[in-house]
Length: 185
Length: 185
Image (tube, rainbow over all chains, first blue to last red; front, side, top):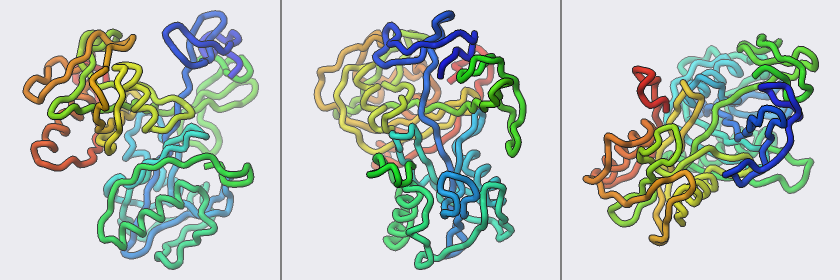
């Protein structure tokens, strides 16, 4: 951020009165430009014993498998965001079950939220950001080719809970990757 | 938003290629300025049978009672945000228990998240945004003077769960107020 989105003048970084953090503040109109974490919302769609994964057609993690998920938009609920992202990425119709995981990813200023869901039919198809879709049973999951650590963790919890016979809500934190080569999410 | 925060040129509203929503896009450098919902995070601090409420020293809802909560900051986890806000508004030390409520408030582009927590001591004190603090038992809760509908709903769930002998996780949506005079949150 270099310029004020309200008046177009340059911004500088300073700690506003009554605050304790550096903020971008307009040098002309004094508007404080707060920046806050973003929510990434998606679903874990079931069809019987199998779950639906999407192979990504975009970076980051092009070609890797993930759950349908994306940035929550203004004006929608968390539940709507999950249904919309599943529709956009997998052209799939789902009914949401309980919220399943909420994972903070502080080094990239994101919070990832995934619902359990079930497919209403098998008429899914790859959306613009998806190369292909496939239903996987537990022993088919491509664990080494999962796009993001939040999704890997969510899937591990899902199958562990399923084996235990009870789904719980999972709150977690993902720490920074060990090297820049690793997945940043 | 009138100007691009990257280059300072005017922005216009249009639907970018591959998108379906109106975005602010820079007329000079083509940067797309996405806007996303913000997380408001806080705690419901218990001390035995009583819970801690803060009376607000700022608008909106000056003088009304609320739980310690505020906007999550970049670089922190949801849990850290709850502990920090409780420290800032109530100067209180807490240990977090389970995440208790997650409430979408789509008409103001917010998601409110509250943890159950317990006070580690009684050395709390009003922070800069708080007029006074008080521990309330259930029959003392000032139901008609609660600052926000998300807090009202969270408190109702809390006492209902406590009477039922089991705390559950609650996901909800708050719809727009019936009139502009009502609390916008």
